[in-house]
Length: 307
Image 1 (cartoon, helix red, strand yellow):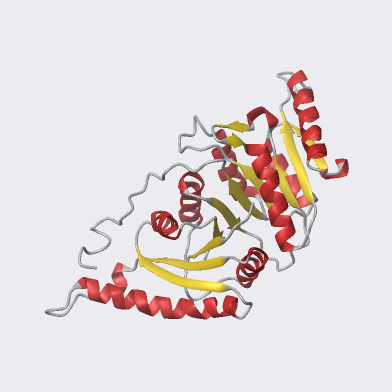
Image 2 (cartoon, rainbow, N blue to C red):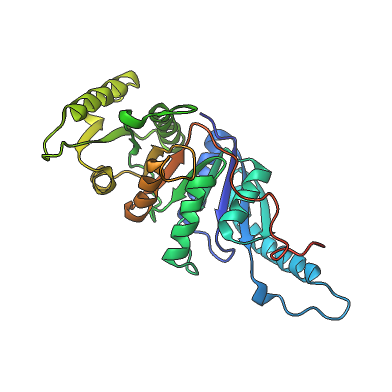
């Protein structure tokens, strides 16, 4: 698995966390990748009423160019690291649709989304991230950690019970992505985690024993030492977050089934829950990516036809 095109979607142009730029730079250098630094802009209150003979489109275009110039200083930080970078600013709304539209234009292998910006609310962030998990046309890395050190392990969350997807095996994909990430950052160890189900009586079920055996075989096939495999019993939501802290994981990687329908994709609901509880980064991968339920063009109410 190689990521040749990275897209970093930032919430603002005044501040991009240094750990985000560091991570993007490391990945780009490791893969010799090109980076598109993107900002979705929508500030109707910042565009005054146009003067006679001056349309709203020209005012919006000027605002976009102003924000693009400001964003260039972060691109220059990456260029100083030897990274090839382009800068894109689009007047679009809502933010998650703007990000998806840019991803459809740029066609990245990996979309990188930093954690909450100062101007965002938790509710806004949660909605945006849920929609990106459902509809992003590529793998998504949510950067949540505030640390610069990347020495912690990369933790692949696997589940042999639900591993098969229409396009392939989610566990194999998650392990492959985890190994790719671990190698690119600092050759850190890869660990496996699985939450096996308990029976109705709260005791270990026969199904749990079978899935534990399958996980250990999976680890052996990928040459992951037994000491780096953890099989817990119960629901994965809280236990995975606890183990990620215990293992000092820098990133959790999980495969998610395709489709926005929660009845089809319970892994999407788990991923959304993990975004609330994890203190480290979260990488979401899929065996295939359906065409997002987002128009290729913004609504005319957002972007004047003349722009």
